[in-house]
Image (cartoon, rainbow, N blue to C red; front, side, top):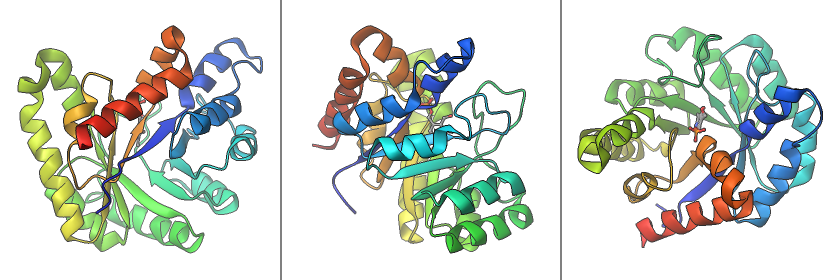
Length: 247
Ligand code: PXP
């Protein structure tokens, strides 16, 4: 277990702002370069089926903008699997996607979708991507992730973040316990646990302190905060808080 917790910066919302006007600005590739200079350990991007975040043409530009490993979030579809096979990202994180949702609500039900996901995990593994499954911190989902041969799971922290917003650490404590138990369970099964969704300067500390976690993926808050303090400062402050929680 490594002491350093990696920070994957999700730059999708740079593209969301760009897409609101239809022009080239702001450019997510520029955000990838700034993230690298600010100490990010990876770039996370979600090529959604509706292309509301990054678009196909961004893939190569983002890769060219920094030397950081790319984590491609993707739905479990034939179209996305073929794109990932051609793009060959460092990591591929399979996420649930419903068109009407505003963001990725809830983890992937790998237990219910085993037959759909199994061949995709195999193809992504063969393409050299480190496959990750975005799941709820639930023992059944972790057990099935092991059966599916995923080397990584990303634990959904959305419920934790919601509870935190309602009542701080006290309200979020039961979900924090579930996250810690899930991270330990994943490690026992030889799976590397990551976590993400809804993490902020305020709520990141207790999650970052879970020693079994290897990586956090954070996007929306970092980009929102960048409006006020700049992207470089936003990422550096998140990094500082993660390191402080681990120390
Ligand atoms: N991890 C995964 C798998 C995601 O899909 C997302 C974005 O929905 C995140 C992490 C980052 O979440 P946020 O933008 O809330 O920080």
